[in-house]
Image: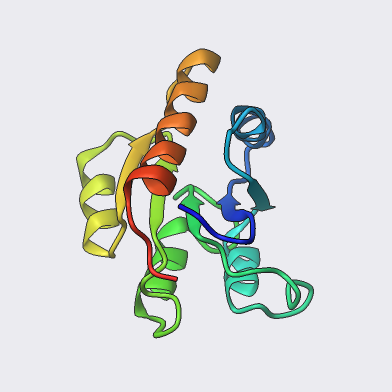
Length: 144
């Protein structure tokens, strides 16, 4: 993916350890990635609508979305993204602890582009984040 600006990834995650692991995994990226983090569903929606205090934030190129969030859960956020005219083409990867079939099915029914169960080990977590980055920003063609 070649652009004149950094790639923006919005991480919607309330677990501080997972936020730190994701930041660490992206730190060694060969791509210019700007990671934005919000810790609940309400803030995610506010960010995506570019409402205060996020009015100057760029539209993300990818959303990494946990489903187990405070205030509004990930499914509510996903539903808003995929039914909003200006956001529905935004790729959303569910990155969550659940590996339950009903959660996976519900995520895809609501329009998730991919569903990944968070690995437990640090090395595996890094590998998964790297694979997400490689897939979305070097293999896939995204709309501009």
